Image (cartoon, rainbow, N blue to C red; front, side):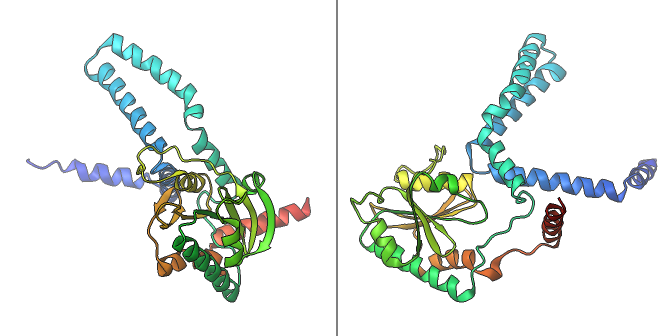
Length: 289
């Protein structure tokens, strides 16, 4: 017979051994790998992962297919050392993953600062007004908008202010030749929490050469936190936003408002039944202890 009638029976037998828990486990593993990939996407880590995969592929070809004992021995030793060096190579990514786990944001992220609608619109309007004024005068600015992840360690590198945000205040902070001009300012809720702060620079090498230190610091900060960073170029006056390691450039008033307003809105906060239950359970456990 040209057809193998036993194949469907094998498939049916295989499917019958799969339980609901197996399916859930596969889905969970897929989600974890997807989240890990999204965390390293666009960073140097993705290039390192490709190099590791090439190394494993060459080891398999030399040992299993070509049967080259010397090269196979070399690649096996390299693989052994690689597992020892992995925590060092991926130190930034491992730290970021542990921070997300500690804040309960690895699988489900909760964004937003939870201001009332009127306050959110007012703060957004002040930020947009300040960005437009700074852009018109080509005054460089770097503004970090804090979200779920706390930035106290970054704030400690600057000068604590804790002032209500206004356009005039921000223009004074970033006024040329003032002590706070070259640093970054941190926005926490509706207040300017700190100014003159130092940010980590991105290690991406493929960025455009026309991007200066401010833009590289903004991208670096967005890679190591969930903050949104507003940048005004000192050379061109261009307004940009850095988020999740990516830079959106040449934003006008409308686009900038669409980017900023959802961050402050209470209604934008992501609702998740599982996370709400988990947070409530953790809170009740803390009270009992």
